[in-house]
Image 1 (cartoon, rainbow, N blue to C red):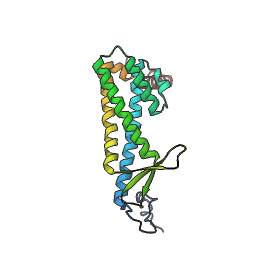
Image 2: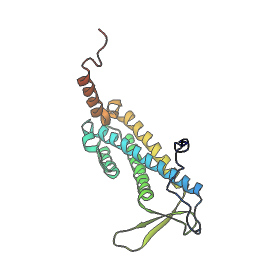
Image 3: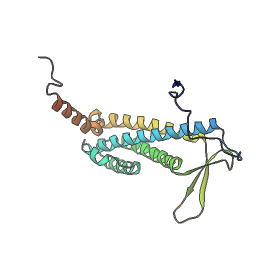
Image 4: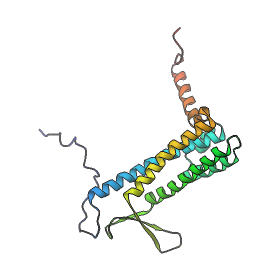
Length: 207
């Protein structure tokens, strides 16, 4: 009879990481590498959250729940560009409110640019101490190389989190709670319809 107690244990994380066959100059320790990867994950999580909030912002600025159809699946750059254009044309919001939102959009655009480098550049380790990002450019043979540190990743991840809260707060304070719900309204309406079709008495109080 075999003992399955060990097989039920979760695998060591990350399971694909093994010690390099040779010791290279500056190869990061497992702990350092793990911290960088965890921070990179926090950047990705924060970027996905800001995309969700930008879709809500787009719907709120358009002023219609149906704007969610257009915003669905849109790239971060598209959402930023559309929101930038909409707020500049919005005359229902005071100049101070518009200026604050334009500042937030600019900050998110900068964070998104850094996120793109973290995610799409080649990570180089072992040749020199620390971590580096390497990027190729169209029709050029040179490589753009720069160092990346744990603090850089943490700063961008925290920036996304703060921006998500700030943009959501701006929507409520400048456009109202109803506008803040436009991005989700169609989904909620569809769910209500599904429940009522399944149970005609759903939502009706006791007689």
